[in-house]
Amino acid sequence: MIADISKGSNFTKLINYHESKVIEGKATLLENQTMGENKAEYIQAFHETVALNNRVKKDFAIHFSLSLPVEEHLDNPSFLKLAQNYLQKMGYENRPYLVYRHADKAHEHIHIVTTSINFDGEKISFYNDWKNSQAISRELEKEFGLQITQYDKTAHYRLSELNAEKYRVVNSMKQVYQDKALLEKTSSHLSLNLKRYKEEFYQLDDKQFEAFIGKETFKELTKFLDKESLLWKSDKEQLIEKLNFNLSICNGVGEYINNLTKAGLYVRKLQKQGRTVLIYGDPANNFYLKDKDVPNELQFYALQKLAGNKDIASAIKNFERFTKQQQSAYIRKNLVYALQTATSKEVLSAILEKANITTQWMQNKGGTYGLRLSNNFEGAIIFKASEISRDLSYQNIHQKLESNFVKAITNPNEKSFHSEKNITNLTKSSEKHLGTKSKQHKNTGAKITKKAGLAILKGASKEASKRASQNNSTQERTNNTNPEENRESSREI
Image 1: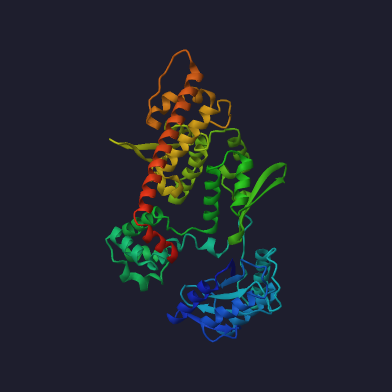
Image 2: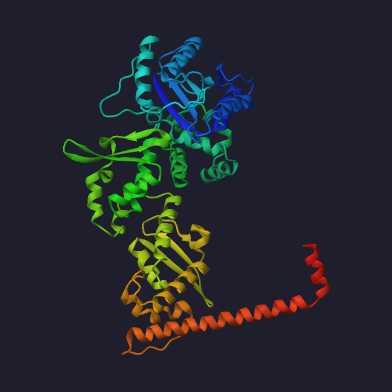
C-alpha cells in the first residue's frame, strides 16, 4: 500500500473534485464525519473547525490517498476500516473527515479529506509525518493481509513519483480539458478534435492513450504541452526545476542558499562522512531530496566552483531551457539591478550583456521608442520591457537613465555608478540618449563633461519651468472662463 499526503488551504477545490467524481459514477462516499448533508455543508463544517484556531493561516486542509497494488482487493467495509485505523494511528482523531473510494484507475484507492485542527482548536504536528505514515502503512498491510511494500535502499518515492512517467501526459491533459480556449488551441495544433476523446481519456494511462491517438500524434502532443509549460511534472522534477532557476539568478553559494530560504524551500548544509552535502526540500509539497538524489550541478562542491566565478553568464549555460515565467523573472532581476547604475543605453546594454541578456533598442524616424530583451540561448523568448513589468516601460527606463546621468555628472566621486571611466565619457555616449549636443574638448576631460552635464540639467530645468508656466496659464484661463459655473461646481463637490 502506498500512502500519499498533501497539505493546502482550499477545501472547496478538494471536495468539488471528489464530489464531481461521485456525480460521474467514478467514486463513492464511504464515510461522512462532518455532520453536513451536501458539499456546501461539508466545506462549511471544515471551515468552522479551522476557525477554532485563528493562528493557523495555511496547511489546514489535509488530503490522504491510500493505494493498493493492481492485483490486490479490499471490499468497502474493509477499506473504510483501514482508513479509520490509518487516521487514528496518524493522530487525526476528534475532527471532521470524509472518505471517498475512487474507481477511475486500474488500482484500488481511497481518498481522505480532513483538517489539521481538531474540535479543541489544537493543530497537529507535522513532524516526521511522512516517516510515520510509512511505518503505519507497513503495520496496516500486515493487519489486513496485504502485500508488504518493499522500498529499496536508494529511494523512497511517493505515489506521485511512481506515477510521474505513467500518467505524465494524462495528468497534463486534465488541465487542458478544464480550459475551453486551451483545449481548442491544443486541438488546432494537432489537427485533432480532442473533445471526442474526453470520456476514453480519463480511463487511460499514457501508453494506452498513445495507442489510442497514434504514436506520432502523441509525440507531437507531448512536445506541445512541454512548450506551453503544461507538461505535468513530479514533485522531484518540480523541486529540481526550482533549484536550477534560483541558481541561475545567484552569484555564489551564500546568495543561492539565502534565495532558496526566501522562496520557501528547505536547504540544509551537513557534514557527511568527511564531506559537505546539501539536503533540499519543498515543505509546501512535503517532499525532500537526499544528497544522493541531487543532480551533480546542485551538489555543494559544484556550487563552490561557481562561487569563484562572479560572472553569472558562465553559470547560466549549464541549465536547461527555462519556462516563459522563469526567463522573464531572470531578465527583470538583472534589468532592475542594471538600472541602479547605468547612465546610458550603451552602458545598460553592456551590463545586461554580462548577465547573458541581449538588448534591442527599437527606433524609428522620431528616435528610440522601446526596448526588447531576451536571454542569450537558443529558443529564448523575446520580451518587450513593458511585458516584464509595467514599471519597466521605455519612458520609465529613459527617465531613470537620465536621472542617473545627471547624478553621475554632478557627483563625479560617487561610487554607486558603473565606473569612473564611464563618467568621464558620459557626454559623448549620451548625446543620442538625451537628444542634446555638447561640445567636446580634448584636453579638458572630466571638467568639461561635468560642465556639459550641468548645462543639460539647466536646460532641462528651464524647459520644465516653461511647460509648467504654460500649464498654469491655461488652467487660469479655464478657471476664469465662467466663474459662476465654477462656483456652482464647487458647491456640488
